[in-house]
Length: 109
Length: 112
Image 1 (cartoon, helix red, strand yellow):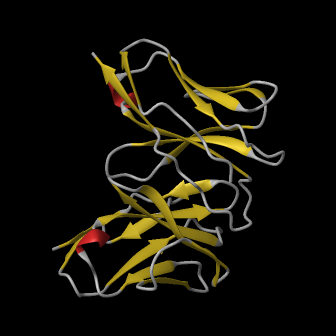
Image 2 (cartoon, chains in turn brown, cyan; image 1 turned 90 degrees about the vertical axis):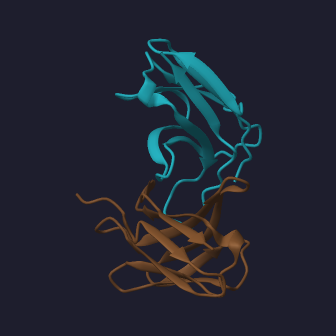
């Protein structure tokens, strides 16, 4: 079966702009979680959605938000981008165990 | 989730067996031990998971002593393509909204 699909794969944005990233989980998986990976901070949990409800949230500012649709696809949004938001954003789909997508590489200039 | 401690980096040569040990002194009764592999600019990939004793699959073995306060990932006969970062995670890996807490991982460098 198809894996976790994240789009776009690469993105370049300017400071102050906003961005939306998309994640399509494995078919049948209802849980989607998001992670930010930077060289300095490593992999950090952003938030997790299950059946369109946010169940868990990491320690990130309110500029980071997300949502999940009825088909389990999820989006995350970052508003008012800062240089420090440059990172690899990973989405994980879960049933029992976690499967990660290849990520979206966001560069803020 | 239990905190884990792993070596920051390890070097090996092609064809050797590599053992990466993870310390998790505060592991809870319901916690499983899971290892992931990550290549640059890719998402972590599941390698192996265990609860106690020994687990083996086609790519690795996982050794867990009786007290479960540590675990060892064993990679037999590594190749250059095994160069990656390896993460040890401890937690209750069910579908209950538990977030994965990644430590710094172990950067394995396999040399020819």
